[in-house]
Length: 151
Image (cartoon, rainbow, N blue to C red; front, side):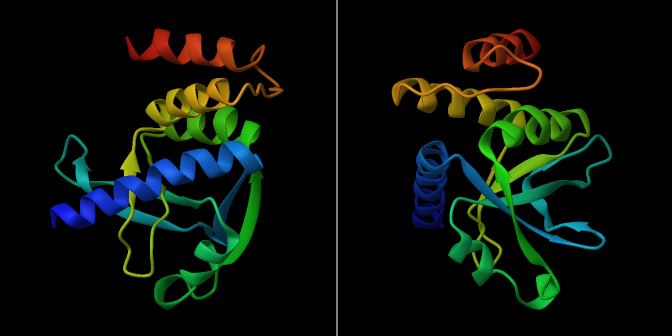
């Protein structure tokens, strides 16, 4: 079990690096919405598992999950800037979690959307990259506003 959590964490860190390099995130979508799962680590006030929307850094990994309950889903691309400022912020507002690099067995990393934004900002800064956003004046502005919300 510990080995699994170490592997899942490594995949999550690779997810952050890869999406910062490519500036593309993949999600599975059908006519009813996006591929979701239920958290195994987080619960809401009623003790129910919090819903997760799953994302991947590579199209092939997302494609490998198109089976069973997700058999009728298609892969959609999301730009990293849209993912950070619209998806993550919106998911936080909706009380949802981000799931990264889920595998065919439905094992993946679960994280708070705002925490993921901060991780992505750090990685982008370390790469010397900035992004153009609709609602923020670059990475530093997004990062400072997210920190203000969290603290």
